[in-house]
Image (cartoon, rainbow, N blue to C red; front, top):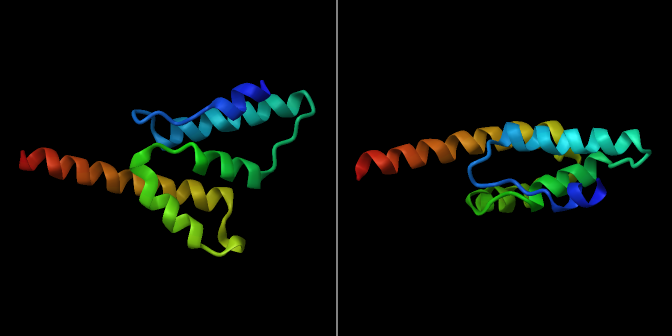
Length: 96
């Protein structure tokens, strides 16, 4: 299970909600066998396994002060970024 947690990555076609749910499911399963994953580790896992289209988000997240880097804030901002990316992709498709 631990290997599955560490090897899980968000696919380019997967939504933020789907990916976060998958990570949280693995964290919950690990907790049942006494393997505790801290929120800080979950945040690091999510950030490090985002697809390339989130690179600008990663750079922005890096400059946010640590006390504001909570899991709930990460998820909130990732969902907003995902919507922005979708809107840009729709705009590009309409131009072509």
